[in-house]
Structures are given as C-alpha cells and as structure tokens.
Image 1 (cartoon, one colour):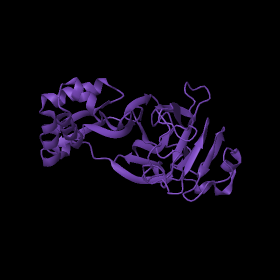
Image 2 (cartoon, rainbow, N blue to C red):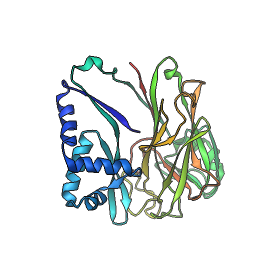
Image 3 (cartoon, helix red, strand yellow):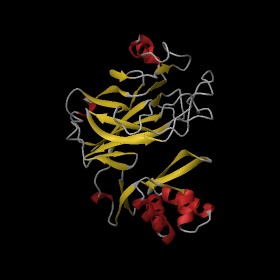
Image 4 (tube, rainbow, N blue to C red):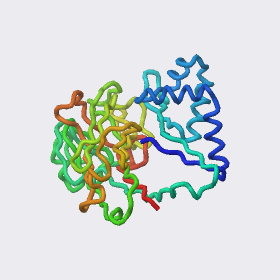
Amino acid sequence: MKNRINLDLGQYEKTAAACKALASPERLKMLQALVEASAGMNISELADRFALPLSTAALHVKVLEEAGLIFTEEKPGLRGAQKICAMLAEDVYINLYGREKHNKPAKELGGYSMPIGNYFDCLVSKPCGMASKKNFIGIEDSEYAFYGRNRFQAQIIWFTSGFLEYRFSNYFLRNEKVLEASFSFEACSEAPGYNNDWPSDITVWINNEEVFGFRSSGDYGGKRGIYTPSWWPESSTQYGELHRLVIQREGCYGDGRKTSDHNLETLGICRGDYISLKIGIREDAECVGGINLFGESFGNYKQNIEMNAKLER
C-alpha cells in the first residue's frame, strides 16, 4: 500500500522529518531506485548501487523510514537476515496555511483478531496437520484433524494445496464510509522438516476473488521462532514472514505493491453479512510448495489473522 503524507506547519516534528529526508540528493536517488524496484531492495544493494559505505546507506534508510517514506522488513538471506526496503509513500503534501484544508484524518478501528483454527471451511491435501502451543492435534498427515473439535486450539497449520476460509463480520462497517480494510498474517512454505530454499506460490482470495499472490521463498527453520513453544522439534518449521493485504477505493495492495484492480466496492466489503478471506495454494500454481500458517503462540509475530479498517471521520 502507498500512503499519502499530509503535512502542515503546525506538525513541527513530522514536517521537519519529511523535509530532512527529502533534502539529501543521495536519499532522493534511493527513493527513485525503490520506486523502480517494485520488489524492494536490501541495504547492501542500495549501498552498492550508489557507491556508499554500508553504514552510510543504513543511516539514509533510517532517516527515510522515520519520515514515513519507506518501510523495512527483515527477511532471511543466504548469510543471515537482510533488511528489505520498499516504498511506503506515494505523495507528500505540505499545507502552508494550516490543518483546516486537509482532509479529515481517518478513524482507525481496533483489530479483529481471528485465531487460525477458527476457519469456516477448508479443503486441504497431504502432507498436512496442525498443532496447539502444547502438542500435536489429531493424526499428522490426516485431513480428519481439520474437522475435529480441537482444531480451534491450533497455533500452527500446514498443508500442501487447497485453502482455509475465514469469515469476518462486517457489521461494524455497514453505516460507515470505509477508506480501507486490511488483513495481515504470518506464513511460509511447507517442506519436509524445514527447507529455507523451498518456494511456494501462496494466494489470497477476498469474497472468492483472487486479489493477492506472493511467492514464499522457503519453509523457514534453523533457529527457533521467537514465540515457537519449546516442545516443538527444532528440525521442523520455526517461523514465517508477515504479509499484509490492504483494500482501498483504488485497488488491492499486497505487501506494498498493487496486486489487483478489485476494490472496496467491487469486492462488496460493506455488503452481505461477512467478508470471506481464503488463504491457500492453487493446484495449478507454478510452485506448489505448501503453506504453514502461524497463530499468536508460534513463529516470529505475536498475532493471529488480523483485520483492521480505516473510516472517514
């Protein structure tokens, strides 16, 4: 998702931070490079491209991030974690005559947290399974666990192809002017044990429309996830990456890039009794490498599947 940054002279620190970030030719060149690189660039790539010391490039990135112009995300690399940088802002506006002429700030609704075991429907293929924060649930590599009563305790779920469908109430959006709805979740590929080089094409559907697809580069392991319980085998999957889908009036944005022309209206976000969110692997995907989905007590992010919304005041 690309944000519009609205500033005025009364927002001293915020406006000064944005102006400082834009006052450097090196940082402007970095922004231009990130605009052209839709998949983002890591700090080493930025340093090499502009012949800068790594420490200098990292400092420039920090200034741009603090100004809200870019965002960074740590991802596993060949030699440990790497920090990926991508554009966050699309426009910067400065109103010199005060806040009155700005659009009213959006009203943000609190998160709707959906435990990963609370899916409404599923269709999965083996290998598959699930576990709570204390033990395995049901029989591993058996679809029966996906229909058992203990599935609501799941904190990690894995399968090879198919989908899980979650239904979020949209009652609180009915009489509001919605600016955006967003969903976030932690996921990675699914390999035997774990394999940091195991690509998988993961798809997200909203109300049965495909709106976001991404390639997970691996089933991550080798070091324990921050919230992964101690009983879980070290030889198995440990953590995933956080992915975010934002639905606006202009379209859908997945992990910071536009992924669909479907929008709040065409997807019927405010119509019907619920919003259907499906996460899964298409059978005809180029890389059918499975999926691991993480709850708040597994992996690197203490969250379930989260839904949020921004409303016009």
